[in-house]
Amino acid sequence: MDNMRNNIAEMIVEPMNLFQEDRGYRPDEIAEKLNVDRSTIYRLIRKVFNPLPAYRTKEQGQLRCFGRDINKYLQTQRVQPHNE
Image (cartoon, rainbow, N blue to C red; front, top):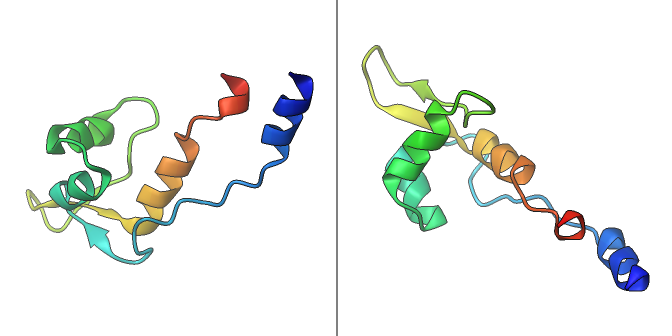
């Protein structure tokens, strides 16, 4: 069992790069790509602790998230199987 844990711990996990780094994505585009409901993305943006970074295109305008912020957020929220 310890050998299996060591093998898993030694695996190199590549960063998630599902989104183009410098592009701004609307919540519905993010939801479609992650195969979740759009309300889930809005909930992640509104979280009090560790929210998904977002900005408005203008005052009262559409919300957008940069691809680099989404990729980083997904990486930090990734489940570590060896810790489970």
